[in-house]
Length: 150
Image 1: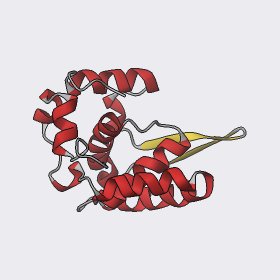
Image 2: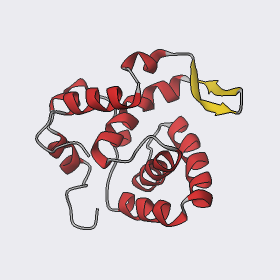
Image 3: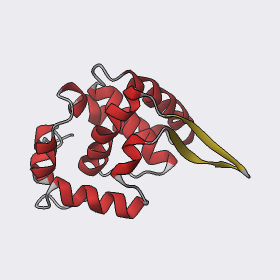
Image 4: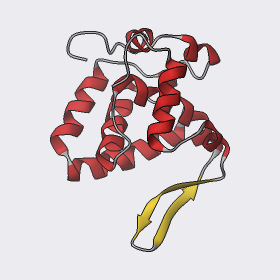
């Protein structure tokens, strides 16, 4: 979890470093998700996905969900429950991730979905550079994650 007092910019930088990411990935044409034995698994990065990913990353910072298979399924459930707005890629990718999550970690996915029903996502407002200047605590408050039960 990232400290409430940290700026979102600093927390996102820490999140990137911990996971070997960079915001340069926001513009790549292909998304590499791992390997199935020696075979790399990747899919094209659509314009819709490129628009959603910066928001998705801030959701990781705010919620504390990991970037593991289970963590991605949890954040998918949370985002679907909170709503993905007009981000088609988020609806599609999150539906896929939540579906496999229900197989590998059904209780955790159910809890994340319930948490998302009491929250809201950044997909409704969209990207704004000023989000990076908020504190993590302010971001959590904006998303309703500071409320009891969320």
